[in-house]
Image 1 (spheres, rainbow, N blue to C red):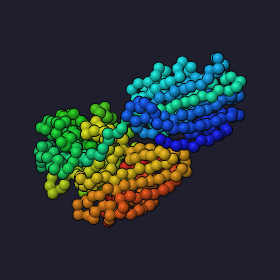
Image 2: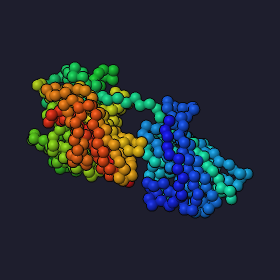
Image 3: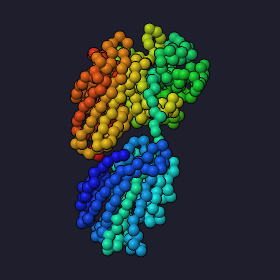
Image 4: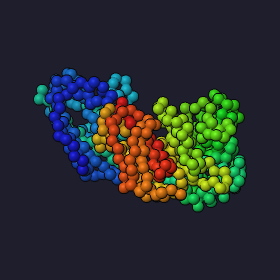
Amino acid sequence: MRTLDLRTSKPRKPRNPGTVEPWNRGALLLLTILSIATLTPLVATAETTVIIRRYTADDRLSGRYQYVPFEIPAGTTQIRIEQTYDKAGGTNAVDLGLVEPGSLELGSRGLRGWSGGARSEIVLGPGTASPGYRPGPLPAGRWHVILGLYKVAPAGVEVTLRVTLAATPSTKRWYAGDLHLHTVHSDGNTEPAGVLDMARDAGLDFVAITDHNNTTHALAMPPDPTRRPLHIVGEEITTPGGHANVWGMKPGDWLDFRLGANDRRMNDLASAASARGALFSINHPVADCDACDWTQPIPDTTGAIEVWNGGLGPQAGAIAFWDDLLRKGKRVTGVASSDWHRPPGFIGAGSVRVLAESLTEQAILQAVAGGAVVMMRDPKSPPPVFTVSSDGRSAAVGETLRVPAGAPLDIAVTVPSFTSPGLAACPADCTVELSWNGRKIDTARAATGQASFRRRAENGYLRVTVLSGTTIVALTNPVFVSTK
């Protein structure tokens, strides 16, 4: 059960109706919020908040539409809103509508529906909705119930809203994978079956085989969804202006690589990958091999960038390349891979941990595209858990925390027990570095398995690096902070 404050506020006109609760002038407003456990869960878990508001006839004159805010957390799968009030023999009539997070200004596209006085209960979810409302995703953040004051009796009207939020327990877990491997079908020295066997022995849950400019390995060894590790068909597009992986190709399909350096047609190629349902990722953007540096245009559909290539750890130039994209507002996921070709290299050094709903190609690639990724030095170590919280809301890697500017942020990092080959064990001998917009701002010891930081909210992104001695063993994707 949540406990929220009981408070009384005078209505006021919002300075910024997109982010601030828009109450109208001159009204006497009593706001009582009581949180109780719902009696009948809609799905697996549910919580109901009761909101009571009183409006006068003057409120109707000063603001025909009143907006009642409520917060929904990530993972919400259904919203139910029940409205009750005394109709007073027809002298009170209060209409009902709903707006998702975003601007409340006239013309906003955040309106999710309007039922007026036709119904006193509405239900909204990803796949179904009450008549007059749009089904679809339920973004976390501040929603608003719209109350249309059609009629208000001289004595006023008290409106009670019961807002019930339901969530299905998450089945997500961390899966270990290597997204950049080669076979004899390009410049590797091992048959596809042998590569998959070595990946299984390394402890990986999934791999992407990405031979240069072809996918014929998948004709010789078709993906078997029952076999582990999960086999994702990829292609490494190799051009004179850099290399890129595409993950999620069909066996025998391929994307044409015959481009020049700094070739604008790279945008068309990346779009063709997206049209096939594949994810486009820039490889080793700053590298020491001939024509490996990325000098091509950066396609708008770029989903990821390989900032960690091989067992030596992330490359500083690649991280700088990534940060430049992130600071420009491009949500591009950082990934690590071994870029394995042959022994004595090790499959899974580096590798990724992906937080996904299931071990399927679709779930893994969706999670990668969404940034739910931690980069690791080896294939077996568990990832650190990194969250940013404020005022009861929290976000993890790849997610966005929306808070007022200047709000306090509580940053928590849990470092599990593991030993990366050849290094001192974590967490006892490890440190955690916190970065803001790509710049290191703080460091903490992780000896107890926990590290914490605090700062004030502003627009940008936070990222965590875990080191054993001076060696990076884990690098997270960002948690984004939005104060808009």
